[in-house]
Image (cartoon, rainbow, N blue to C red; front, side, top):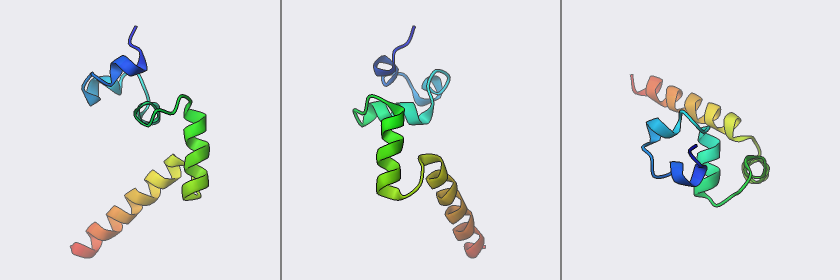
Amino acid sequence: MVTLSRSLDIPKAERSRNFSETDIISAECSISARTYLYRIFKLKEGCTPTEWREKMAENVAAEDKKQD
């Protein structure tokens, strides 16, 4: 079995098979629980990590469209 701390030594593509991106970010930030990361993130950013990623994707798409 691969533990989260051990998985940080495994290439990203390999890690994604076992853990979510948020689990990996939590471990890299030394936050033991994904729910705690969500709570802190929402307090700081005003949205969940998923909502933030969606907004950033929309911003990138809008910027790409402007450049075309």
